Length: 151
Image (tube, rainbow, N blue to C red; front, side, top):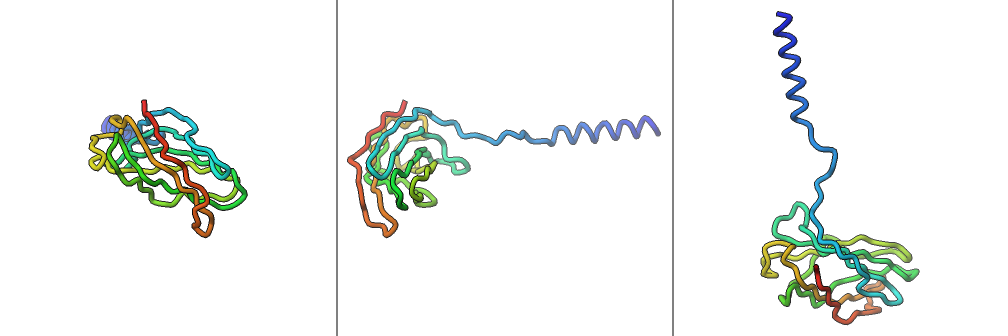
């Protein structure tokens, strides 16, 4: 009986060990090539790379960081977006709104099928302009078309 008890306890411990999960969160692979792509009196925009959009199959994320250079609230919107010369609409779950002097890590996304690609690794070029708006949503600045070669 003692041997049976030890065997049962050993199997339970073995079973518990195999059920554990990694403490490291799953990270989406990112094509990194951080570069400042736009700066005016209101905002500095850095392109951080492209990646799969986590938890959403068939979508690619365009990872940006914004630095609000003003002392007022601004919202930055993408316009005239294209991927590899195919027009697409960049979307996000929330607007890129930030208080004066603050930074914001931001991901815009697009549907791979619409862009004619199967995953983010096929992105070669991104083009878009940015509209900077004040708290009343009046446009206070707009970039020319920004072109990014993705490596």
